[in-house]
Image (cartoon, one colour):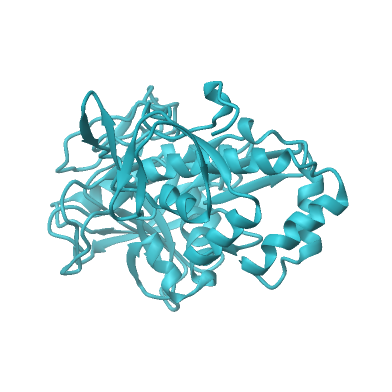
Length: 405
């Protein structure tokens, strides 16, 4: 979960990255779930987000299960309204009575971890099939409620802000440059922000309904990126007025195109389309397919050339991702074609679709026709970055006219 704080406008924005998003992991020369990057420590996760999504990270905060419970308890717990009974045997969630409930740290942890949840409606238990994406939505709502309750304690007072931050700091794992005074300064700067009005988005993804095989290994359930929706969401999250790479001429970008699916003529066709957009194609070739059924389209870039990769990515639609190339890979970008993607047309808003073995459909978000020079989306339906809270999910007690438990 990423938090963008803009001191110039006194605004905040939260963006979640689904834990199962499959992308290149720096230093491994392989792809995996973004969640797996944390196995090598916080810096590897930060580097993955910066290298693959182009989002700069200034600070890092981590809580484990125990420290999360301690923080919630230190803040006095929180009140949440449950429209229906809900349970999750994996997380320990078990709310048997609808209404406003006061949650301690243990109960709050069960809420934010729930991704195998059942809810009771119409005389029966129903399964919530949204999994991790449903959990993300509940976590966004949880943070709004917790922040609103903490804000009521008067965060404009430096002594109060220092006491609140000081009470939770022992349970936070943070980067070496993030001090207590830095945190208090942020609290005082943004104390007037209404948590209920903070936008919360989730990167659009394509859900693989089958176990995903990558380089001969079964990775189970994963999700894939959805361009151009993801970049549009990231641009909005960062408050960018111009998309990344927009100041670079395609003619200054050299690209090698490799066929990553074995589809006859795919590299040559893609190279021709990129040349029509003004890119300098240095050559074509083949790359061993990483999976038997589905492959992402991946742009590998030399260290320091992420803006060039982002420019190329902005001309592609579908399951497309970027990643830093291993040392010694050369000075050009390398585009390894995947199963389903489009290349923007230079002459109209339509996109010339590369050879694809996947049926085409669109996401409801941004599914209008593409602007000239921009790609359209193709591939399985992508999730929305913002969706309403389901009727059975917990929410603010105040939003339901309840003052407390």
